[in-house]
Amino acid sequence: MRARFVTIAFMAILLCSCSNGNEIREYDAPDSNNASSQIDTTSNSESSDVTSSDTEKETEKESSDNKLYDVTPISDAYHNGDTSNLSDFDLTIYNKACEVLDEIISEDMSDYDKELAVHDWLVENCTYDSGAMSAIPHPSENCDNPYGALINGEAICSGYTTTFRMLMQMLDIPCGTVHAADTEGDEHAWNTVEIDGSWYYVDCTWDDPVPDEDGRLERHLYFNISLDEISQRHIMPNGVPTTDSNEYSYTSQNAVEIDELSQIDEAIKRAIEQNDDSVVLIPNESFGIDLSSTDELDDSFSFSGEFEDALIEALEENECSYIRTIRRETNKGNALYVIFELE
Image (cartoon, rainbow, N blue to C red; front, side, top):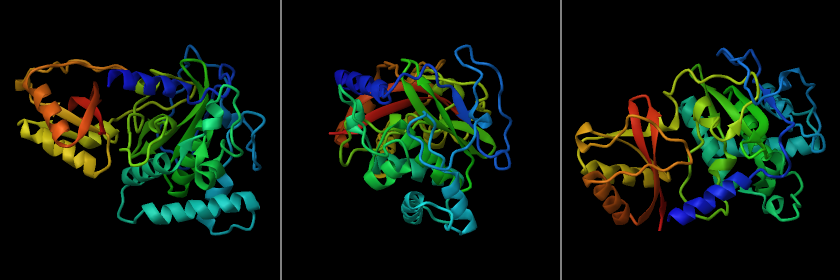
């Protein structure tokens, strides 16, 4: 299993290796009228002074100048109910986006629930463009924009990122885009999102395993994580927002306090019912597990004793295979983030 994880992690590093990202450092924040939080303007030592808020917005498809596709005309049309100014290309995207939101969003949902529904739909219904990963890359047409993600079902990181932003904007949830590089120097793109006054980071691309498999559980390793966590493997430009609260992080929203070993099995069953590939467990101090610190997202934490035995037994009873555990922060204290897969 460890070998399988290493392979997956290595593929994740390659996900956006379409071009070198050393010259790209842009953060495009949401409209200031919709974003209430303060933005941190502290310089990053590896960042340039380029911010996309100073860059002219384009309304046509952009694929030759490294700019992310402008989805604002589509979300604006959704809010004002007027599609007359959309191109045929954008109208096709608009119609499919409306269909998706009608399918997955209900009025009683919180902003967090809506965001999670969009993330899960996107990583379930879109696959990473295999042509972009070939020895001689030949990415498919429109893989860098929402048409590729929504209509063709294939995208690269910029396609995932612009699609997520478009759907968030349609739902009136402040969402920005970061267009920079991962720590390997490969061009990459991901999102910021504001929930209840605090900013979080989302990387839908890296939550979509390669190769994709039908019926797999959903991954949320890069859903609503903090600036510190995203910075472990993403190079951040100037002007990105800080994370002031972890209340709406995925780990906080799913943390389960474990006082009795039988609760582990209950947590795993609930995760599978929700199509999640992880559980977030906060063991009682009596189990003697060291939660004094946290791990980086690509690390693995080892522990032993009755808690480990009960965890492995519960996974086996639910026909799951253990992958790894990371110690992560929640609003209730540090927890064990346990990742598994269906056998």
